[in-house]
Length: 525
Image (tube, rainbow, N blue to C red; front, side):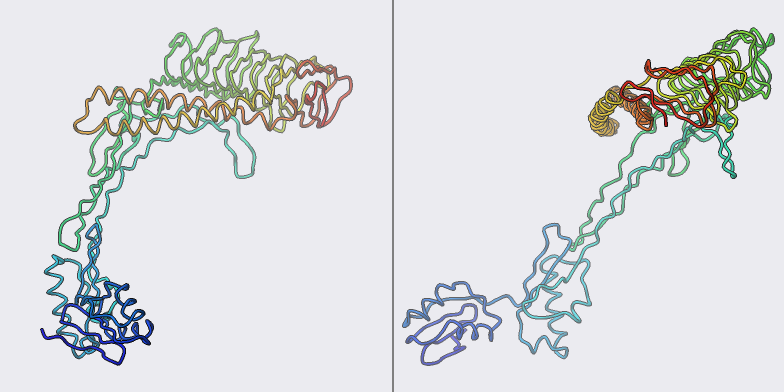
């Protein structure tokens, strides 16, 4: 097209040939600010050389030189992920008016089609938001909806705890050590991961979602089976037994349940799983088991030959009273209503409801903490503490209480070691679980997946063992000094107490007193 003059004065001339813009200067005296105003009056100009403009104005006179190009009427920009498209307009103000908008709208739609933009076009932008030199969002794709990871819910093994009634009283005798399940009873489930919902970009192409992750259900296939129910995989028990969680793998261990007594009809019991005895154990009979043992008869047990849980706890609802020193052993805890003329050895705690009479007890902690709890006669030995309402009797029965004591500094160091070890093992566990997820893919080698699964089980067991130790050690920090004997009501004469080789013979009755060891001295509180 013929050259057109856009601006002319005594100092400069600005012309265009349609696509390019030129400046020629005749003499000095024209400022850059004045020139910027000229450019502002012509929004179609895109300056390509500020140096040319400066030279023409400052060092006039200068011959005609190109300084700019014509902007596109409609420029289109597409985001790198093709999920958004923008336009920038450079048209006359008249074309932006509502009366002339239809022609411009049609031109924009043609431009978008030329650029391949066919989806998510925003009609409201065409109607209301059109302005020059403004980046306008003109089309937006539909983001994919990523899939959800599978969700697992497993049977929760209940911790054995005394029942607390509404009035605040505590019943130490109504508790369940064994989590029983019946045949075909629910043990867990996994809601399937979802694949997600497809998206679409502004060019009309489908955008794939990220599918959710699926994690395996860990269970003992000998005692548990799975059933596909819609979008869920559900675990059920193959037979009646006791729920057994080992290394986060759910199973049903053998559970021997005796409706009546252990007597001549049953013989002595030696069992690999858990045992529930709804009656009692007759004199001269013996019960041993790997798991927990419950004796639910109200009468308790008498002069039995022996009672032992090799890996679990023992609960005697009716208490223990024998004519000779029968020995009760538990790897973990012993719960009993009362203990008379018996020897009890527990790896963790002995928890007695009413009284201990002529009993020899050896445990980490001994609690006889009901409002009438008494220790009369016998020898009570504990690592950390002994708690009782009353120790001794008005008849001044000889009673010996010994707390071997703990070393809190060493316990603190051990807890710190455990924390460091837990951090490391949990990091390893997370990595192994990720490896397991990869090893469980469709193309994975089953043996490889089983090997990783075995490593996960091993490290999970180590973590559980460390956390249990940490919880036990943490409780020791609540103890006064490095060992304590708490008498909530009274201690009588002829009682001998000892904490970490600091001892005292009680010659006069004392009320509500706590003895503890600190700095190699026996102190009172």
